[in-house]
Image (cartoon, rainbow, N blue to C red; front, top):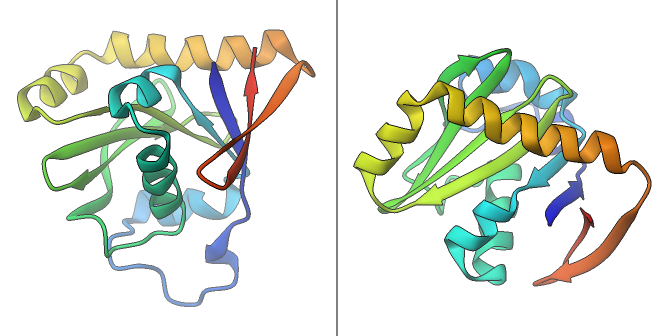
Length: 155
């Protein structure tokens, strides 16, 4: 169950970008049209309310909740990988070639995070699996509300 969230870009109306936006994220932010949330991300957090809060804070560039936000990690096969850190929680997300933010995973252990980041093939597989599933399923979407956030997911 991958959640696919449609978003509006708050950066279009803003003249000043948030302090944490780096050049990579500022360049691609206006082109981002949707968000995909992986099952693994939801399973890692175990709380729909916390998941939707983190997703919304990342999309709104909210610096109040995060120690680090939009930290560029690396480019893997044209997919840009970013990290947000909230206390000990590391949220790993990327922007794929179709200009969608994909929330991949969340973990509390920094060594696990570094291990995942070093495994480029695993990250590429995660993104390909999500992108492939969306492309093959097409119009068969369901709608669900998580903590007031309307989302649709691919069966």
